[in-house]
Length: 240
Image (cartoon, rainbow, N blue to C red; front, side, top):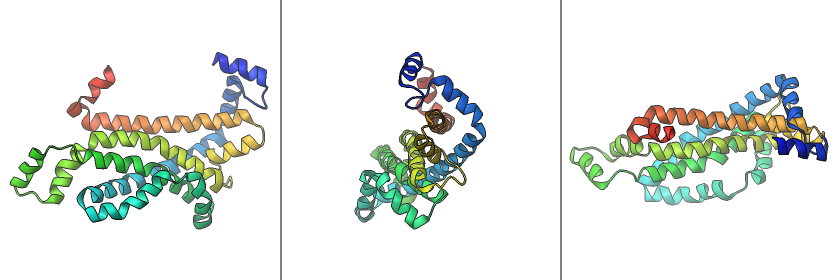
């Protein structure tokens, strides 16, 4: 913080806002910032929720069917390698301005870590465990849901923590090009304040975006400790 203050004083407020200027902007613009943060949070949560549903489904198909794996592979590769910034303008053409674009970019940004974590987690059970369930007459679907899905939870939560941050990043990128400021969003405020040389407001919006991503990750960590903490010793790891 001290280094930031020194650099800000040397650069001037037009280039770099000082920490106290950012704090003042957080307070004086709190109504607009909180409204924008609520819109970005809504887009991030909706995109992350869609990514969880679709990512788990594609991971199940990938694990269960060789034909399904071949069918999904090009699309999943596209989600991973195509820059979101490149497709965001197309999403504006297809979906129009507003929340749907931010939800779509949040979904695209966060689906692959969930799919990859699910695919890895489904391989966690040993063959002996699978054979035991089959010996008792379990169907392939029962093995998948009752054994593999539960064994995949540690990997899935690890993927979710990565996906939560990416969902916020994806939503803000969608808001860069798909938000017209009604209602305000964090992405739109970043672009507006940068163009207006309001670096204090720009940093304030970035601070709230980081807080939003941290809050999502904290919620996922809390859910992980509640669901599998005792099972996998997660609580002990966090205490260390």
